[in-house]
Image (cartoon, rainbow, N blue to C red; front, side, top):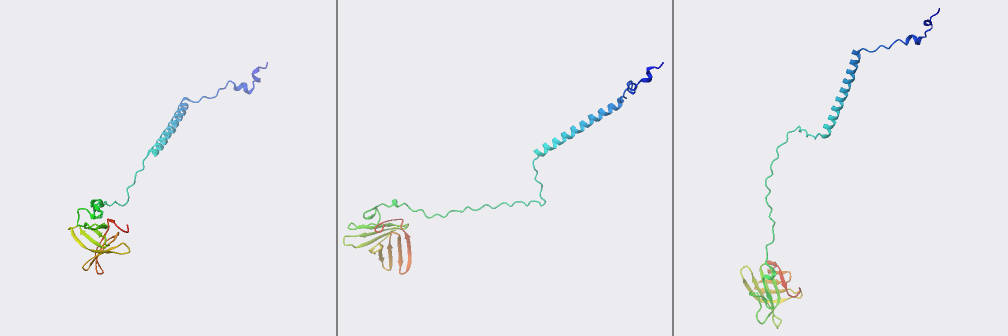
Length: 199
């Protein structure tokens, strides 16, 4: 009698065999390796993120120079520069004028004369007086001491009046008062206010 055991195939023979299970020690060691690797990766990630954040928020620090800085010398105070201004002159309306010259002044024509030209410089009041006969006279007052000069005068084609007192000549024009002695100019004053021919 032949038993069926002789006809067993290889698969049937091995069906009863089981794969060998790993030991508990090896399983524990593998788990430890997995947990440790994860911890290392996580720590490296945290360090990297912290370094990036620190780098982004880091303020630059100036490095000290190799040479020591010399002390800055204090600048001496600068002197105040005062503007040089021309002397203040009285306005033209400070001296009242009428048909005979300056009111309340010796620079004024007589009752029989009329002021042909009236001028004021920074230092003088001058009036050229004319009468019915066509004669001219000069009345000048120096403002510094109220000294007065009265003399005859004449006119030119360019509306300049000329008056003489000994060797001194007085030229009166819209431009100014010019006092000369021969070829030497004694005084020349610009007109602040002038009323007369040529203006």
